[in-house]
Length: 328
Image (cartoon, rainbow, N blue to C red; front, side, top):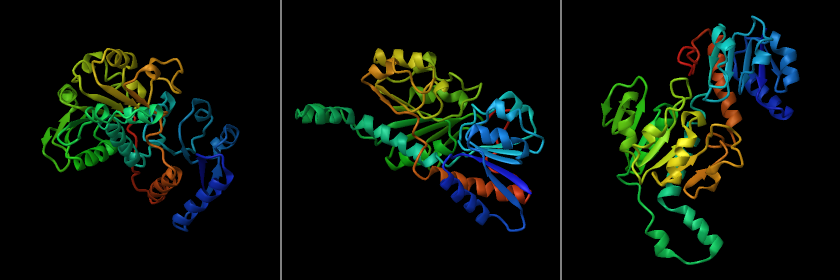
């Protein structure tokens, strides 16, 4: 018997639906027992009996109460930075993430914010409030995306979906990832570069998109030194993790109009402090970490988990396995 813990919903009806979906989707010769451990009390109660756990994050308190029976944890997010605690890294437990589930909605968010800036929607919103007809004043500040350059820092699943959509607008696409060999004119990317060429991308982008995972290597990767390379008419969009960006340096650049604007879905501290200067800036678009969420997210997560569960039961390698050395 394989004991599987689901720690993704407190809604009993949803849990029963997910439980049935899992049971209906695995081979009948495997005996599994699915337990709802979404509450802290239930997780404490059952953690020693679990072989597999599906959860959004790993907590030191309950992780240390596990037994040697726990073999695999799937994280319900793409980012695992808050789950890779020291005990997890040292353990033999396999960690997988849910990379790819949110790639399309995040890419749609990015394109939406690019359009928000390029079409000067902030002034359109003001028009509705003020009811003052300023047609030319608003229109002359709009721009087209064709032949504009988008730079993507982190060309993983999300970065690729952003690139595809940017290419549909005839944008020039520059992208980087850490171990990338230099390539030019691929199907959707004009230049695909190693991370050491990041400054080149920053200085040549009208829209700079941060999508890389948070690791010790990428913490405060974007700071005053490379923000100063951004053109004055450029925008920064962060859908990665708040700590990849040195927030105070960005605020200074925005206050002094050294760049034209920023869209931020993630912040160094969440929830964002109500006294943050970001709320007072006219050149920011802020959202409360929603870019990767959508109505059917949990069912998409269950389907992703089922695919890996069948691989686990068949003793095959798991998809989206997290490297404990690289921490993503």
